[in-house]
Image 1 (tube, rainbow, N blue to C red):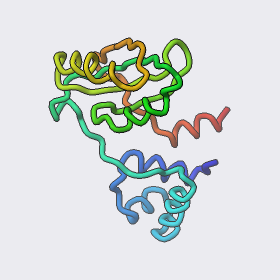
Image 2 (image 1 turned 60 degrees about the horizontal axis):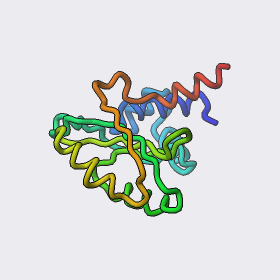
Image 3 (image 1 turned 90 degrees about the horizontal axis):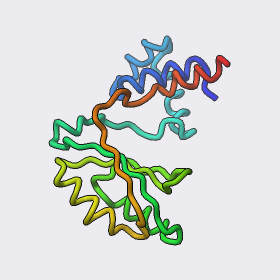
Length: 156
């Protein structure tokens, strides 16, 4: 598990993945080389899987965000998952328990595009039997700090 110093490093990288090693080392109280070694160890352990940029979909014209519960014929699950991986408007896909088999998070430019995506694209993915769509009205929370979450669970 992460020690306190690793949690500080992860928290700093979650806030700003572009921080320099010198600034990161200064922030967490290490010199540059030991800080780099810790980051490398976190990467090698798979805790840090990569670095990315957060994009505001609305600023790129994607005004609709929806969550779609999908029920499928399970013998087609591999083909369904492959099709989901290839679809550019599906941001996330989770296999779920409960009434639906999957939960998709998608973006589209407007309601007409959402209608087309549901009727023409998603309904024709392999094995799809039923979908239930919920629209996102506004985002309340967009993510968590995993460093803080680990610290929270270790306090109990």
